Image (cartoon, rainbow, N blue to C red; front, side, top):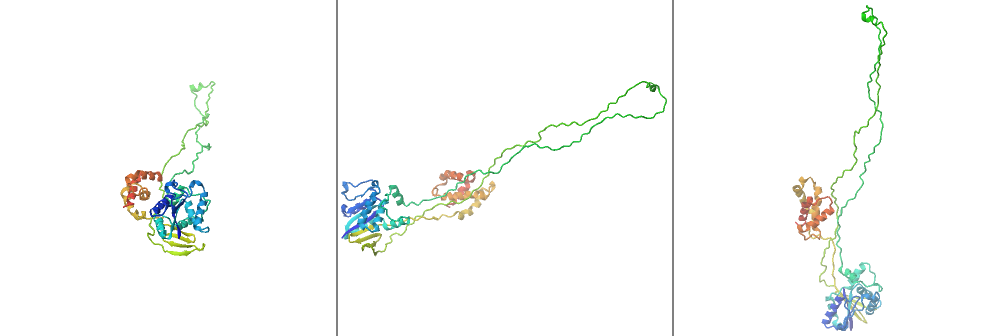
Amino acid sequence: MSQTVVGVFDSYQAAERAAAELGRLGFDRSELQIQATDDGGRSPSAADGGSAQASAHADEGTGVMASIRHFFRELFGEDDEHAGNYAEAVRRGGAVLTVQTDDNRLDVARQALTNAGAVDIDERVSSWRSQGWSGHDADAAPYSREQAKAERENVLPVVQEQLEVGKRQVSGGAVRVVSRVVSRPVQENVELRREEAVVDRRPVDREASQADLAAFEERTVEVQEMAERPVVQKTARVVEEVVVGKRVSSETQVVEDTVRSTEVNVERVGGGAERSSDDTTAANGGQTERRVGATNVVSNDAGTQQAAGGVVGAVSGAASGGRRSFADVEDDFPQDYQTNYANSGASYEEIQPAYRGGYELHGDSRFADSDWNDAEPELRQRWESEHPGSAWERVKAAVRRGWDRATS
C-alpha cells in the first residue's frame, strides 16, 4: 500500500539534509518533495535529478500560500485541519518534506525524519494557538527570513532596570528688599541765652564828691540787649548699607530605591521519555490517527500521512544560582564602617548604599566574571552617573568591600 510520510522542518536546508539522508537509505529522489516559501537561496537544478523540489519562492507574493494549502488539502483531504496546520508551518518559514513509500519502509522513513530533526507539528500548533493564532489564512503573507529566525530563536528578553537620579530646580521662595522714605517726629533740647537791660535805682545820702559834681552834664548810656533764637537745619548721613545677593551651597542626599531584572534559568525537561501509543478514530471520512512516539500517522483509502517531530523547551524564571542575598552578608559591613569610615564624619546610612552597590554590581551579568581592576573604570562611571555629588574616591573602599562579599 502506498504511504506518504510528512516531516516538518524549521528551514529548507534542514529538509534538504533529511532528503539527502533518505537518499542514502535507498529512497529514490523522485519519491521526495519539499514544500517551502524559501529555498535557502538555492533553486533545484538538473544535478538534483528533480529529486527535491521547492514549490515556490518568497518573492512570488502571497498567492503561493494558496497553492501550498491546495497541495496539503489534496494530501490530507478537503476538510482536514491538518492541511491548514502544515501550510501555516510553511508560511512561517518552515519546510515540509513528503516521502512516497510503502508499508515495508514506513518506519524507516519515519525514523529518518525524526533523526533529521523534524518538529512535532501538534506541539507547534499548540504554541501558535497560545499566542492567539486561530487558523491558517491562505492570503496571509509568508514570513521573511528575519521573522522566521526571530520565531525559531524563542528569544527571552533579559530586562534590567537602572536607577537614574537627576536633578531639577524647584523654587525655594524669594527675598524682596523694598526701599521707601518714611518720616518720623524728632525732638531736641536747645538752651537759648538772653540778655536784658536792668535799671536799678538805689537811694543814697552822702556828700557829693568831685566826681559826683562832674556828673552835672548830659550823658547817655545804652545797654544792648541780646537774645538767642533756635536755628534748625538737616543734614543726610549714610548710617547702614543693605547688600542684596545670593549665596550658593550644596548638599549630598542619598537616594535609595529598588530596581528589577530578569534572570533566565535553562532546565532540561523530560529526556528520553517514551510517549504512549494510542489509536483514535476521527470523524473525517473514517480516517484513523495513530500516535507513534512523537509522530502522527493518518490513514484513509487514499494512503497514509505521517509527521515526525521532537521537543526542545526553555524555562524562564528568577534563578537564585546559589548566590547569597545582600541581607545575608550585610551584617559584615558595620564593622568595616567602624574601621574605615567612623572617623570621617559620615554616618553608616550614608555609606551603606556603597556596600550594597558593590554587591549588586558584581551580580550584574556584565561583571559576573570580571576582575575588580578590570571592572573599576566602568563601575566608577556607573556610580557617578547614578549618585551625582557622591565622590568615587570617598566610597570606593566600601564599593570594593561589597563587590568582594558578593562571592566570598
